[in-house]
Image (cartoon, rainbow, N blue to C red; front, side, top):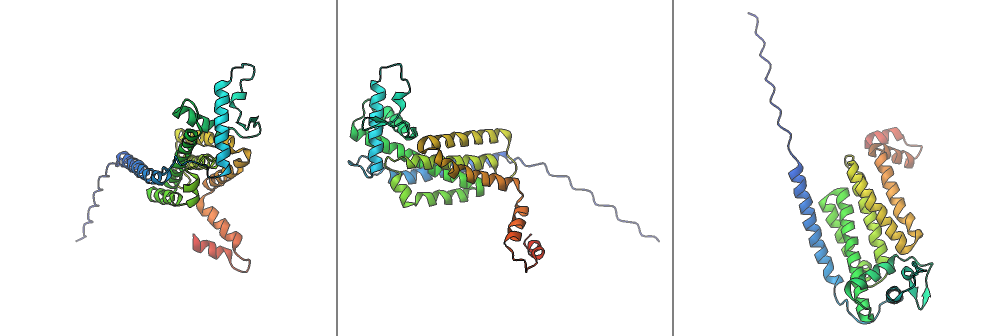
Length: 275
């Protein structure tokens, strides 16, 4: 007798798609808690002996003097025919039209928030507090950049590397304009990485708009603090990351191998082996 064919197996019902939003929310909450812990650890050495009398460097002396004189000129200014002059940095009685005003504006804002009149010891403490805040912003931006690239562990390692840099921890507690510039540059890089997501799926339009808005604002603040010479240092790495985002990683890898392989070796074999 002819054997009867076995009935085909019944297809298994497909499992309903899992909702990944609660897990994503937990990951974001964990990242914020870890970042808060890192900032608390970093703030401990930065806040040590901020009211120490005396100035560490000539740049700090110039920054404190400029902030005090600019604050006093802005408070005492009564004329209406020169409305921009109170915001021009002034040092040793001379208006510094060629000096980028971003650092002096930040320092004047720090003095205005804390005191009604800028006495030198209080002004030094206020300006150092501003540097500490900008250093914490830099560390948070480095964490954000690392988190955008490789997740929580990469962000933590990046922040720990930044926290253990002796120069950063030294200049992060004195009133110098280099710290705000570095903080703005790190914030621009981190927000650009968040907007592009170079190693993940394409971001949403709202994410791109917000990320590039923060990036452009940080670049503008860096230029106001240091000058236009800092723009290539920030923009060129962002352009390079955008180019990597446009070119597929496999294609870029093949092109790099083909460029650095001698002509005596079969490039096709090496490219195929590396794929």
